[in-house]
Length: 133
Image (cartoon, rainbow, N blue to C red; front, side, top):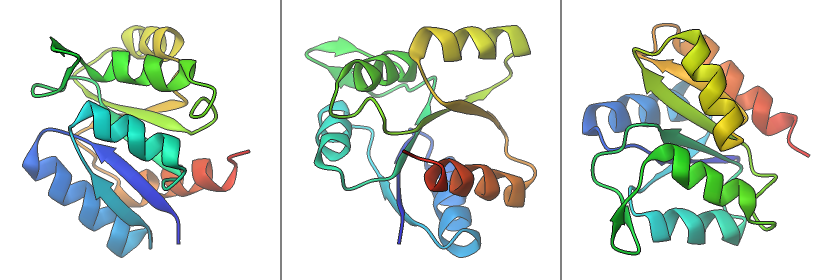
């Protein structure tokens, strides 16, 4: 069974995404906001895809506040995690900004919040996992 790492600070989104990915997608879900854990889990090969909230409020790394864009950049710059699909999750953002976020971060895709079409959400995640390689 494929596993998704959810890096999200909103408990409501954590619950909704986890339930959707588990029940509708048949996926296992792990969750953390701890940046060191994100890196360790990603490097371990224990997950097949990472979903990262762009606007994290509680994530710190080496004593500094860090947002989802920077975490994604770190993952994509590391040869051990560069090929691991990362999807950014963001709200209230125009298409131009989203494309810039993808280019800057190296992320493989983005999903807008709030998620309205849960089946499409799951299908996109599953497709990225299946096409990983």
